[in-house]
Image (cartoon, rainbow, N blue to C red; front, side, top):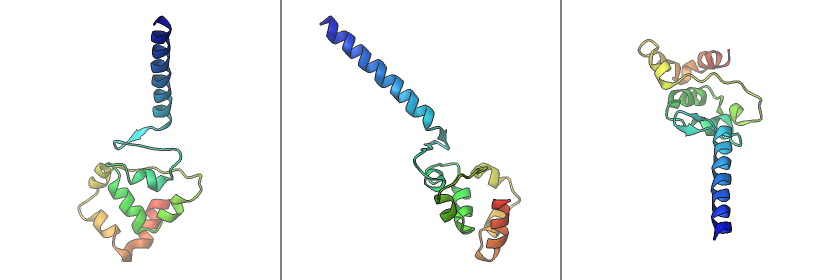
Length: 108
């Protein structure tokens, strides 16, 4: 019985430590884990705080690029940051006729 208790305790400890390592490798952003095995777009679409960024990246035609092999550095403003822009700014930038301007903003 003592061996069984020791084995159970060891198993629980090992699982707990393993879960901690997995969590450390997948930080939470916008309430969603960011997985090393996924590309930037696959991770960003799961974040509740980056919906505007995803829409902007798609409108600029940059999603395919960010789905490719990097390395990439992305400074990812939250929806709250986009909302702080003057009224109408985001809606105007997301229009197809402003794709070049939006692309320049996102890639500078």
